[in-house]
Length: 213
Ligand code: SAM
Image: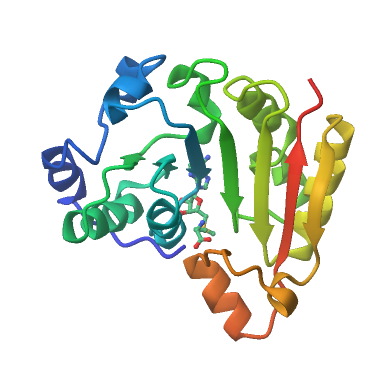
């Protein structure tokens, strides 16, 4: 993701308080009150510019979606999309995935999506991959028993290492494709990176993995 410095992003987002949650720790255990309903909450970790989360929210009005994006300069694009086309079932957070326990109670999140996560190819950076065991433990602590991660990537090495870390963690694989677009499910919502890599002819890998706790 190419980052452009956008010094105005934080002030702009803070003005959109029905979309952007500046103090998410204050909602830990109370997200249902923020959405004003008890619908399930799905989060996407590393949302980028938000094509997936806004597309999913449109497709599933009875699910609440929360975008988790590290960088304000990136997340601001999601907020802008939501200002242009309001969707009451989406919120945006600029936080680090490693701190998700600070924002959600156990079981408060019903599903985690990881899409085209940064691959961190060097072995010495393996701990930064969003499917490393410490991240798997963080997601487990906010999901209910038998919670699920849905994961897509164009990066074969990241897919392989994720299969290894999830399998070592004791997760079960319920769904897998090594070429998602060869037989693309009708309801697949493409991300920005997915569009880009698919148009370059690269296969897209996808899996659904379930915790066995
Ligand atoms: N999911 C989008 C897509 O498929 O088009 C964006 C993919 S981009 C390669 C990965 C995104 O994850 C970046 O926007 C990056 O800032 C975000 N990210 C990386 N590490 C993160 C972390 N620890 N917490 C939250 N977001 C993170």
